[in-house]
Amino acid sequence: MEKWTPKHEAPEPLEGPVVSTVVGGTILWFVL
Image 1 (cartoon, one colour):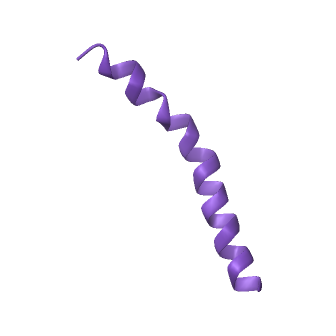
Image 2 (spheres, rainbow, N blue to C red):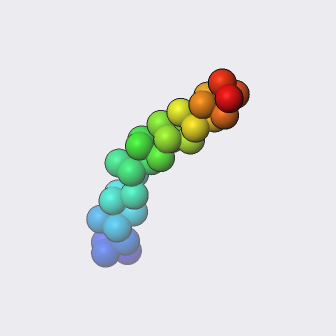
């Protein structure tokens, strides 16, 4: 289980940019 901890923590920081991209893309889609 200890090996899964670092791997699980890695994707978490990527969620920020992904969420920003999705939100930004959605706003851009509504603007268009």
